[in-house]
Image 1 (cartoon, rainbow, N blue to C red):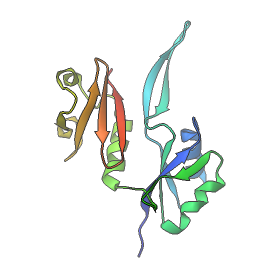
Image 2: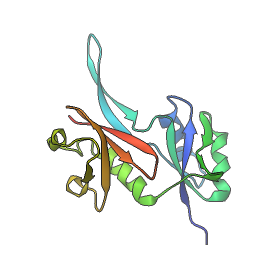
Image 3: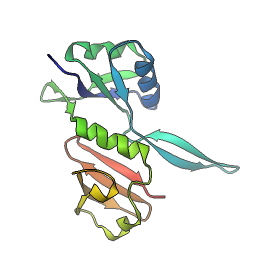
Image 4: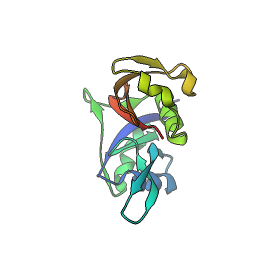
Length: 159
């Protein structure tokens, strides 16, 4: 029997969470996942914590191959990511990795300042089993980790 696979769906700018909610609230046999992080925004009169997408314009879709096109019934969807003419697939462990990042905004500790670009780091000590990442860039408050199989760089904010 065929199994559900994870696909990368492009959406319109600032529609990531809306598309995810619409798909998950539908009665279709399709799941959507938009990894997010919490960011503190400062205005002249207040500070506010807001949830923003980790990957801009990207929503991950889990469905059977035959049901993939049904997502285009929802406003805000654009197209799937393709690789050599085939739909781009994401491994289950990478989705799990992104879910862990979304659930734990403090996943990377203060040690990050001691690491430099190009270093391969094991993420085991940060709660990821058998996961590695390559540091692309680091600053005092942020780290950019390369997820090679997705073709993305994830920016993690250190609080």
